[in-house]
Image 1: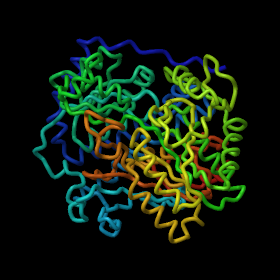
Image 2 (image 1 turned 120 degrees about the horizontal axis):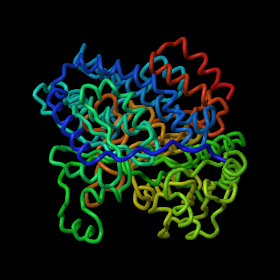
Image 3 (image 1 turned 90 degrees about the vertical axis):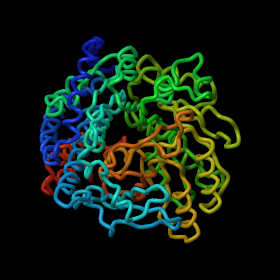
Image 4 (image 1 turned 90 degrees about the horizontal axis):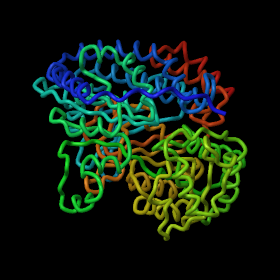
Length: 574
């Protein structure tokens, strides 16, 4: 049914891994003091070398995830890989040029505002006429931590750049196995924002990309600023415990974080309680989340119900649902008179319209079985499970006052759960819904809120909505759209809401992307139209996704307004 996946890469011998680590460490001081123009030159070279790998990169990922060239899997691979990576580089170059020419990152006070509670907000998107044309109606903000003012914000952006005496550091980046742009974008953040050299250990799930990445990042590899290493636990253990390593950055699970910091079981809980770390090296981490989708009650048309059902289905279906930002818990208003109609439309989208996807990520069947064993009334909305497929599955009617597996375990497969919170209007529903997701749902990485514009026109409902944004403890919040948009923009931050401790790490600590290099961000908020004029390329039913995302990759490599009409045409007729 699915094409044969790419072959595996032999593990890097331990002595060779040490040599590679020593090589980048030897270049740490050189890199930390490199002039800003040298960094700009390298980013310009990277935009060319990354773009040159677009086709092999996308074909390898598409094949691994079950699709040949031109398939849905291939199109997603174009978007999640080279397109997003090239956007990150394009924005990075723009900010570095501003730092060189004006000694600031390009966020003037005219783009700052202040929330009623005093938090400073920076409007970061749209950042160009191209963004305005392709993402009409979308805006994004980065909210700062309490205590940051407009003056201290401007002084603390890109904090490493005025400091010519900054000591070079060596970071181990433990790459993720699901979204292919994660490893290079994490490395770019550590390199160009933190001024550290990197050893990137590829995840065994997508290690086949390593040789492609070595070519894509050749300008950095050839200078000794980046090395790629392959292997499993033994290699990772060597790197994480090595004396030359100043920091570890991981995108993965909280279990992996705990094993690195607190050691294996048995005895892990006891060491946590005593504060006895087995590894004192600082760790920044993005560790997933049970992504909630909060549906605010309102007066929706039949078209609204259908389009938003497909919108939610897209949040589940993307990448086979192997995303830390995948929609996992639908939070609906129990008293909403259109709740049943919306749930029926969602069932139709998942059962009849969304194609089955290959369950390529290890452990998917076991996790699916745990959920279906726990919830025997779960609805299987698609073909029966078999060796290659975990079907889209809906667990509905959960009660917020119960202790539920769906509130505490991220399925990391095609399972969507639904819980009904009391309330029949925004004013009644939102405070209870926000308290529920903040207090009972595991993780703080990202969330979505879907709210009709007519609901926001009511002053009381709008106040409840704004208070909900204030109170939500998530690092990225998307209004009317998939929370994964916050990952792909790069102007926004990506990481857990601040406040997790090593003993209770939750969704992690620190942040990446953050093109404007803010020092103390709290969360990002992305706003989008309830029904966009153009179909968004992450929609599962976008029939021209490949041409759109390939066009956006070319646009991010060499921005030009002349490239916009073709992209818009494919989006309009998708």
